[in-house]
Each structure stands twice: as structure tokens, then as C-alpha cells.
Image 1 (spheres, rainbow, N blue to C red):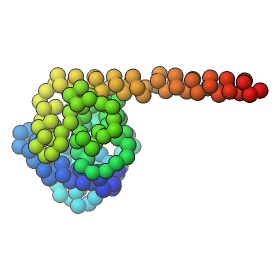
Image 2: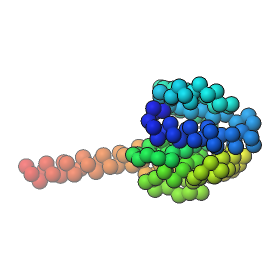
Image 3: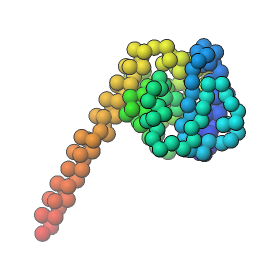
Image 4: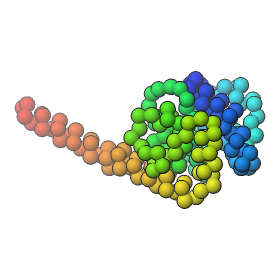
Length: 173
């Protein structure tokens, strides 16, 4: 949702302070900002190499060929579903500390942590340039998500709940 102030702040920071550093090193780099209701003040800026999608039915169509999934949050709280979604899709993630806060993931294993404009630019550039690093991060992160939250885990949890309910009903009868 690009009408949430924390996301607006993060993207504004990224396109103003980080993206020019990335484009200076990789002039053909492309940034796609996916999310509903992006502010006109950002969309109308016409930042070189950057596009805003607005609402999309399926984010997978827009991140399929991405080499990095960047979470430049600097403020805010709540769940960090977007990080696990990216990891589940096999995308290497670059995130600020706040953007990945509360998730049991390891910097350098599951994602790259980068705070500040220079660090975010450097981490983004590392992923753009290093196929092996992208593959390592994406495999480890996807495995983590599958192991903790995959359909087999969900089925096991649901099965345990059913057994517990059945046992409680049997004992109460």
C-alpha cells in the first residue's frame, strides 16, 4: 500500500537519496515500485529508471525478473509480511533494520541489512552485480519460509488442532 506514510517515506528516501547512487553505477538499472495509491508527488517526478505500478492483482507478475527486493522503511511498525512474501518468491532481500524488524532472519544468510543511503545503495549494487550472492540469499530465505510457514507446516498445525479438538470432545462426552 503506497498510501501508508511509512511506505511513502521509505520510497521517497530511496528514490531521492539511494537510487541516484545506484543509477550512477548501473545506468540501465530499473526500479519498480509496486503498491496501490502511490502519491502523485512521487509518480509525477519521473525519476530516471523508476516506474510506479499502482494497484496490481498479482505482485508476482511484477517481481518475477527482479534481482533485488528492497525494503527501505525508516519508520513504522506492524507485520513485515512483504519480506516473507519476497523470500517465498525466491527474491533476494535488501532491508533496513526497521523493514525486517521482528523477523527471525539472519543478515548475510537470508537478506542483506542496510541502513542509510550509502549502505542501501551498496547492498543493492552488490545484489545487482553478484549472481552467486543473489542465489545464496534467495535459496536460504525461501528454504526458511518453507520450513517455518509452508503448506506442510500449516497442515501439521491444522492436524494437531483437529486432534486436540477431537480429543477434547471425546473426553467431554
